[in-house]
Length: 206
Image (cartoon, rainbow, N blue to C red; front, side, top):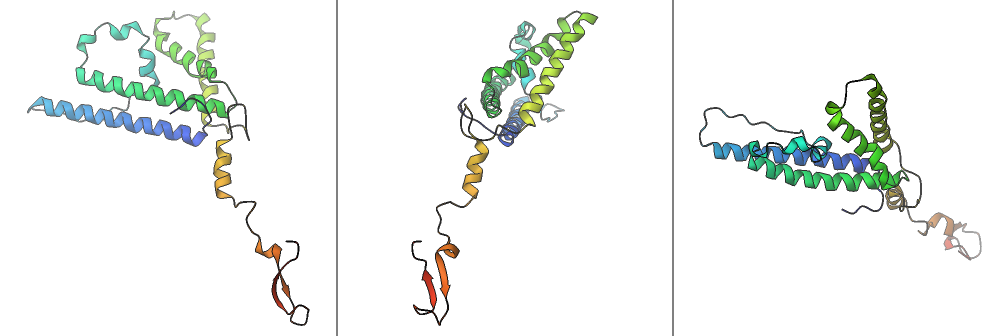
């Protein structure tokens, strides 16, 4: 998956659905591995973990995540790292392409996603004071703006600086070709009494 070109809203939603399904699949695989390795533990529960997304991505830059790595299960760490790498690639590629569809540069991912995500990750370390309220409102506003802009608003019509309209390709594939033969325009019905003899004739000059 490349980072150039454009995608519409449907493909962005589809990409997030695929990520959610992959996250659930990785959660099932991890639970099955634990069940196999338990070897007859009296009580085991099988759960599916869908808690997988941007929060995990921003945890990578939080030093508190690495304070006690020994307490993490090795299987969970491998599955989580693999899934997070795949999620990051899919998320960045589809989000940047969707911004291109809105005729915005890829750097808009910073105010729409990165800034609100970092604020949410480290908000518990910030002072609980009234002067922090504007920062909280700004982060929430940027997140809401980005969500509406990327997930709800249609892309720019026609060709823009990032490539052709992805919806135009679908419409061109469905609509008939302009060069197709229109029989009703090129064939005329001649009455039997007319000369030449009646019947169907191709119009002259067609």
